[in-house]
Length: 246
Length: 345
Image 1 (tube, chains in turn orange, green):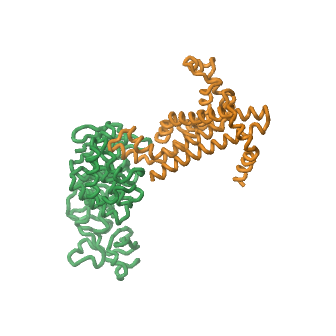
Image 2 (cartoon, helix red, strand yellow):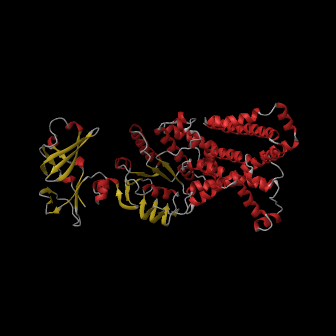
Image 3 (spheres, one colour):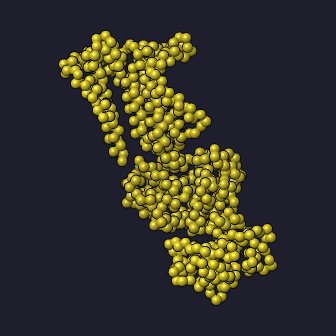
């Protein structure tokens, strides 16, 4: 029943468009641009989450400090807040009236209606998924391995790259996949910050409101198909490396 | 070699207080104590893995209390081995070589020599998960020795091993200590291990050292009720001192040994209590009749609880004594506690 609940609407969606409609849709430059932008911005969000989130997740896994529970609750906030609220919140600090917005504009960085804005929104919504997976992965590495490495002469950085990271990388990859998956499906926050340039979910919404279901459906099918291919490749890559390691 | 002075360590829920210890070069030193007493914290503090709040740790005269672990020249072997699961046994053993300036070729040659000595040469290409407990511990010891440590720290190295491997690794540690001449500092809660392996030791309780000295001396003259209980001297009683004997209730036990005058307790080990036919013609000194209250049979020995005028006395006897009609709960039996078994503190 559970599988049916997921598969019936999706299969109806996929079977609802003809091959010709699908081919016509993918030849449309606007569709290709929107799907590419979705993929690239989501990938960028995952990479940024990896870069800024990895040291933070490691600190959360290894250190106990006052207010840690509060920090962890704050990390989960983007999961709970309605997404248009995230868009409004980001816009409110990105404008000229806020010192952060002013600083960004002075540095030539615009958030409203740009790819930068889209990536910022996607990092905001995807980062909690990466942080939680990475922290769990680091926590699963016994601290004694790191201690043994230190007494054998490795510095903290050398220990991290030679012991901790090789043992936690699968969780980090899972976190990146989850972050990217979350980013690919984002609509509510992006539509407020950057209606243009369009990402695939915004394009689908526009086509649905302007022309109806039959125009938006093929875009959705292509997005699902390409996302499936991408995640399958990432999962295979993760398993392939894992089996070689064991 | 290792000189610890006024060492204090403050952790969120535990404190090591005012530790003073001197471990001679080449010694096999044991830190003993019950679970949660702080012995592993002290070992990790020596290794540099726990920050020092106050005091000094000197090795060969240099204070290393605030050096990071990688610059202390000590290695540690944990009870759960702490082998890196993503590396082969060879890669584990040679892990520290590059940080200690040992070339790859020398490291591999040295690893092969150590593996041969530890009888794990055939395991070098395998990953740790394919090894038994004893093999993992050997690999962990080889890894720790490859970097030529000044001191080898052993955190309960035998407690996770099956009894079959325990004796084997125990013998191996003894041989390695003799052959390498390295100072070994071992943490254990097992006094038998300490007696077998080490010459000197200290007992730690609630973060404080309560006794230090030669292991044999600690074993024979524990000096306090806690240490006596810890080393298995389970018969401990308040007594009344008399000129050539001591009075235990209405029992007079001959004791002509040394006295300081401050002693309040009399103690003797259960294995030194003689029962029935164990008491020969010439060693029936300090003998009396008690009632057998209970018998708990173990593998090779049986623990007998005796009652003498409401006082419980424990004896450890060979298991073969059970079932020969001599020891029956509720029946009287002759008991002897030889004078040389009595300890006052």
